[in-house]
Length: 300
Image (cartoon, rainbow, N blue to C red; front, side):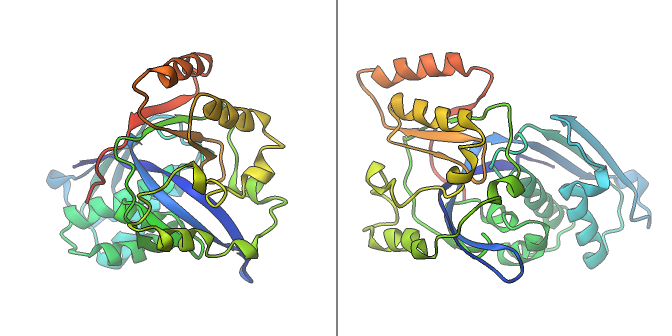
């Protein structure tokens, strides 16, 4: 079977406190971006069934993943499921990496979550989404989100999820990532939590008549990304991309996660002015444009 692990963006990301375990509590909205995805093909090798758990064929294509196969979250996910559910049949895995690293898009977490979905179906484990989300939580804080893969309000370390009614249908999104990436460790370096910002995003959702149907530039002061304060001074090109998207007509622009991807939302422009400005921007950053797409319906 073939799956397409997609990426995500963050609408707002407030770091509200540092926990005793060293992690940080945050508040954000995860939004799936189906148009930018990796490729994951997983199959049971029927003709070579055995009781050898380590019998895995793993082929990696696309962007080079700079780690040993055993350190890849896809393999870690398989090992976890194999041990717990007694998966003995040999499997073949073909993985094509397209979502870039250090981009704030959750690509690795998505790969692990989709591997869990594949194993659940292939081996007929009959686990619910809630059970799958619990299984993948230890592989990465973002992993449970990709099990649901619909807009979610997230709190805690990003693992406490509440699906929300978010209408972005017809909104154009442009995503640009510079060549330089940003590690999570670097983004947190110098981060000052904002406890006064706790629940602001949740309050904005509650005050909306229907989810976030009224989401627009007026909410940009609430839906800010706290990591921009630590990342922009070290990576001026990321700040420049955000400004250029705004200059091109984005009614909302933000860095996603810990960076370095920046995205902008654009409304339909009947006169074509936005198209012209975006065309110039995309030509200038041609090697950095990850996606230019329009939101449709969310997948169930």
